[in-house]
Image (cartoon, rainbow over all chains, first blue to last red):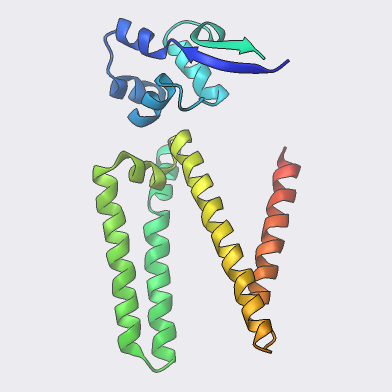
Length: 70
Length: 131
């Protein structure tokens, strides 16, 4: 089974909390650029970072990152 | 060593290597009878280290290239290193070919090529053993 990432809710979740990219970056220990790259789908985070983001937003990785089967 | 002091040590790795290389150039040039050249090379390395440290204050990318705290920038660094290594490998092989064509032994390019090949194989084996 091959999965392809189609998008994520990181920007939406961040905006809902009224956080800037820099705030979120500081919270999960990465650069602002990396948060931006994740939000725009240009960078796929590692599993630990994806879990850290999911925990921060009190959700799950599967709910935050959308995939489709190829 | 605590996590924060380890990060601080990592931050200073590249500038420290620049200074150490500059001092090695100075000593080597001095021993070779060209102390002036040694001073110039040391100065160049000190200036480069300074530029890197100043750039790190302004640029998030440079800062994280130094402290290696950001996984994406660390991955970019890895790809850039691989690209630079590829270019060097081609240059070394081309140098060996040219030297052999000139009727020489191909040194030091053949040694450099062998060293690069052994280093690559060792890194692959180490990576495989670690999982």
